[in-house]
Length: 338
Image (cartoon, rainbow, N blue to C red; front, side, top):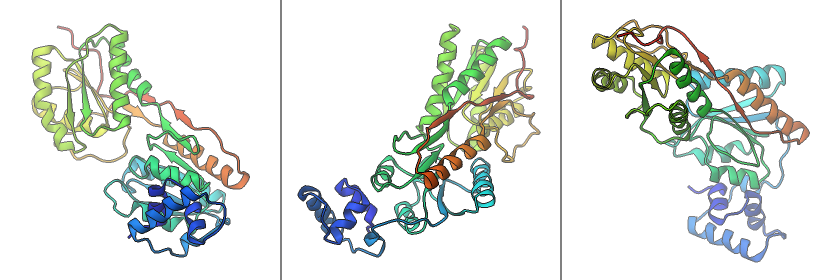
């Protein structure tokens, strides 16, 4: 069933413009009105109460669209949102779990619009640039955290994936590694592309050659299996270290390499990304992982405080990119002397 958001996107106008057309109000030029009417006809749209809502009032509630509440990465943000909005500011929060596989994503926005003062979007795929355009046209307030989107009308909070990956490779080079392999994510997302570009740039700056890279998915089993290929790279091409796009990939790879007889980090160093709190089931007791830690707490605090300022004071702050921290543990060391 079509919603007012569908009509607004199809016509290329704001939701409030659609509402004015539905209510036969003045202030809409002829061309825009016709586009709205054509969209209504195309979708056989039946206006509801939300479509006739002409003004917003404070509800003391925000809407949060999150990719996956069970993921420790997002649950940390949720804890911070609750801590600030609920405990300190006495605001309510309505949570919806949604991603690109959720068919009712736009309906979530439609339903939340009736009862929230602003939105926080957590993670990629929870909202599209087109949907943000509709929200912006309607003067609705939003903050995106880790959405990998840029949008001038809202506040976007993210990490500098490029610099973080560069830092990892530079650290390995300073340990003495020159043959550094990279394990990529097969899904072409901006964050993973930026991590790979940081890896490439560090090697170029130090005049080292990029190795062949290998793509896997998010499942730890795939990382375990890729260990057979990494074994060949170690034995035939002298690879001494591997950088992985996230901690799941690093953990699975280490598990597989240990089953193939390699010692970590004596034979090969491995680095992850995210400093994940999730417990990953592995066959072996793997060493504590050297990884990149994202400043989740600081990012959440910044995002929720900026949204609150927009709601209360009408002042829009700045989007911000946070730097990450390299956490050195047990899976990296100087390369083995021959």
